[in-house]
Structures are given as structure tokens and as C-alpha cells.
Image (cartoon, rainbow, N blue to C red):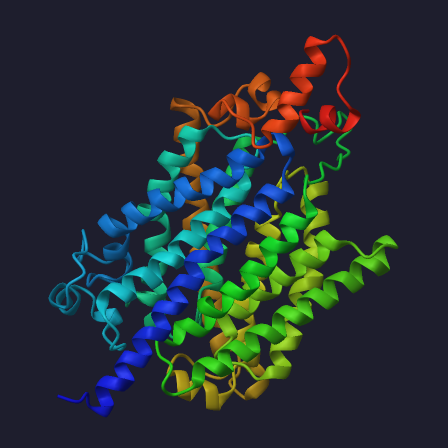
Amino acid sequence: MEPTLSQVASAVDATWVMVAAVLVIFMQAGFALLEAGSTRMKNAGHVAGKTILTFGICSLAFWALGFGFTFGTGNSFIGLSGFFFDGSEEQAAAAFQSLSYASIPAGIKFLFQLGFAGVSLAIAWGGFAERAKLSVYFVFGVLFTVLIYPVVGHWVWGGGWLGSLGMQDFAGSTVVHLQGAVAALAATILLKPRIGKYNRDGSSNLIPGHNQVYTVLGVIILWVGWFGFNAGSTLGSVSGFFGYVALTTNLAAAAGAVAALAISWIVMGKADIPSMLNGVLAALVAITASCAFVEPWAAVVIGAVAGIVTFYTAILFDRLGIDDPVYAFSVHGIAGIWGTLSTGLFATPELVEKVGIGAPGLFYGGGFHQLGVQALGLAGALVYVFAVSYGLLAIMKATMGLRVTEEEEVVGLDLSEHGTYGYPELLHHDSKVHREGGSASAYSAQSLT
């Protein structure tokens, strides 16, 4: 029998969302390169390798419990069905009413949402970089995926209390990015700064990443992956609306890149590449909530503001003694807050009606109602995620410990945690020089300290 027009449309939608899921999951490669390039050579293998480990942990925990807690039928606080998801349409129909609006297969819905949970967890790890024990990634990875991420996810997307109020977070400025960033902040506070980051007088020392090319490539991968992240959240392609979402996403990212580079040039006297890269990511984070609700000109404004604000907040947090190696809270937290609030300002009546969530923003005659809902959602998410993350990590610190020893940190996590170096040729060179009684090159010595 020839397929009906409806069946063809469903197949096209399913194919697009599957492609989008792959793009979101491939963002892990972007995080691996970004984090490895932003940290020192002696930790590069560890930082990149734990990306694979933690996505594996997240996949198993989200399949067993996280998916059900996020989207399962339950109450306004948490989902209570669909655990150990078997991929069947029967279980999906019974357990996941909040996802019933999309006609794509249940297995694709799961993979798409898994990608989001994995991104949020990857963001959280930024606060652990270069000083956390490998065992911490196992324990907190499970706890974050089961007890933290699903709760706010259910509040907004799973039929919870924020969703019923009409909170607008199309692809996760709050649900994904803010949650990961707040967990990273809690970890950064408890772990304390890296050795050598601050002097006794409180002044900060720059600890540059070892490979700026890696960070650039990582950001490009994340930029491309974001089309799956935002445009894929339409959970369909037949209407063509996913193209509009991709347009606003790209405009915001472009504006963030240009604005951040320009402000760094004005303030520092040099066009700073890391600031530009942070501007791109901050803009993408900000537009994630509003990409389906705002006009193109507003997307440019949202992206540019995110790039500029992130530049200044990164400097501020460094001066406050918060050692955040990859600027997780500035890029994903502050920009996530701005992006979530921006829909309360720029959401248009036509797009709100099209998406079917919330009300128009302040600048389009909607008054302060939607802005208030967005602010309430932010406050709830911030309090919950920080309290639970800090509490769990404090318990872990008192029982199993969070941080490697001083000696292990100085040697580097590649060797101390894995027994192998991410750049073995350089390690072999230094060992040979040492055996022959010489001194290693300044470059090699610096990479190992």
C-alpha cells in the first residue's frame, strides 16, 4: 500500500527530529574541544575523555529514571511514570502525556531529550575542571541527571507548575543552560580555585588554555549543533517553522560574536579571541529560550547584549575569586537569565499564538505579565538547583572528597587519574631530557605545571 500524505508528513518530521537529536548529541564533541583547549596541556586527555564517560553515565541514568521524572505523568513538581523506558509507543502513550503533542516515534523523542540532558551536564562540568576527582564525575553525574535536571525540566516542559503558568523557554535557556551553570557555580565554590590562580593579595593570575584552535573548532561545532538544539525543538519540519527558528538562532550568534569582540577591543585595546568565542556561546544560550517568540531584529539585540554582558561578568567573577576555567556561569548562567527574561520583553503576539505558550512581551503590549512569569521561573530554578547541587556536593566533599591532592593537581590529571598523558610525545621528550641530565624546554615545563 502506498503511504498516505499524513504518513509521509510524519516520516519527514521524524527524520528531521532524529537528525536534530544527532546534532545535539554531537555537541559533546564541541564541549570536549572547547574544554580541552581552554585548560592546560597536562589535563587535556582527562578533560576530553571524561566527556565520553559522563555522557555514558547520563544516558543510563536518564533512561532509567531521568526521562520519567522529567516528562512522566505525575504532579506539578515531578513526573512519576515511564521509568526504564522501553521505547514502545504503548508505554509512551500511557506515561508521557506531556510529549503527546508530537507524532514522532517515542524512541526519537527520548534521544532528542537525552541530548539536552547531556548538554546540561556537560555545562556543569566546567566548574569542576582541572581539580576534581574522576570518581566525582560518576557520582554527581548520576545525581544531577536524576535529582536536579528532571525537576526543573518537569516544571517547565513536563506539565509542571511553570508550564501551567505559561513560562516561555522554547529550547532551554533555563531548563538546560541555567541549570548546568548553577551546578557549575556550586562546584566552583566548594572546590576552591586552582593552585596558582590567585595571589595572597587576592589578585588574579591568567591561566591560559593550551590550544586556542581547539576552542575555536569547539565553538564552531557547538554553533552548528545549536540548529538541532533550537530548530529541532519544533519537533517537526512540515510546517517549515524550524527554518524561522534557525534564522533567529544564527542572527543572535553572529551578533554575539561581533559585539563581544568589539567590546574586548574597546576595553582591552586588543581584539580578544576567547572573549569573541564566549560571546558566540552566550548569544546562543540567550536566544535558546526566545528563538521561536521574537522577530529577527530582536534576535540580533538579544545576541549582542548577551555577548557584551558575558564579557563584563567574566571579568567580575574572576575579581570576586570565582575560578571558573571555562566561564560556565558567565556564559551559560548570566546569558541564560538574560535570554529567559528577553521573551518577556520581545515576544510578539503572532509568534506567541503560533507556538501556543504564554503571552506577548512588554514591548508588544503584553504588560509585565510574561516578564513576571519568566522572572518567577528563573528564581525557582536558581534556588532549587543551587540548593540541591551545593547540598549534594557538600555531602560528597565531607565523605568521599571532591578535589585531587595538591601533588596530583600539579602533575596533571592525565597522569594522576589515568596514568597516561594526552600528549605522550611531549612527556617522552621531557623524560628523556631528564634522564640525560638536561632541562626540558620552557614550553614543555610550562605545560606540566
